[in-house]
Image (cartoon, rainbow, N blue to C red; front, side, top):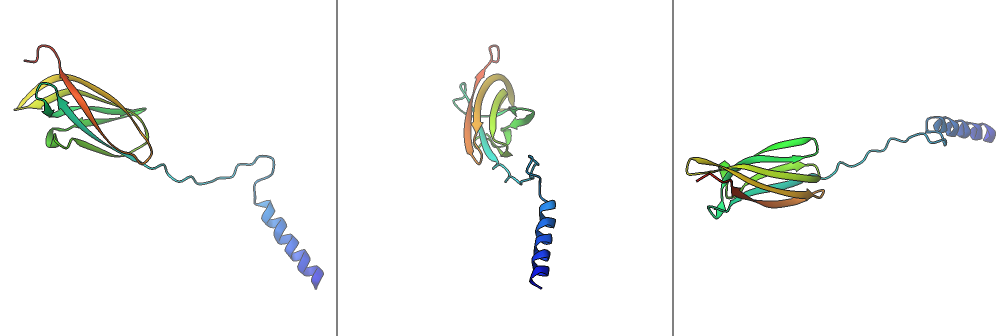
Length: 131
C-alpha cells in the first residue's frame, strides 16, 4: 500500500514536470502589469495678447500625433489623457482671437513619466506680417 502511494505521488510529480518549461532555457510567459498612463494639459500663451489664447497645432510622440485645439476652452487648455509615457513635442501653428487667425510659432518638449499629470504652457510667437 505504501509503495503504491509513493508510485502514485511520483507519477503525479513527473506528469506535472512534463508540462513545465525545460531547464534548457524555455520561456515562461509572465504577465506584466500595464504601464501607468499619463495626462498632459496644454495651454497656449500669446506674447502679443499677453494671455492664454485659443490655438491649434499638434502633440506628437514616436509614431503618434494628436490634434491640439484649445479654442473651446483656451483658459484651461486641452487635456490629453491616457498617454503612454515618453517624450512629446508640442507644436502650435495658429492662434485665434476676436474671430481672426494668426500664424504663430511655438514649441515645447516634455517627457511624461508613468502616471504623470503635467501642465505645459506653450508660448506662441507671432510670425512677421501678421498685423
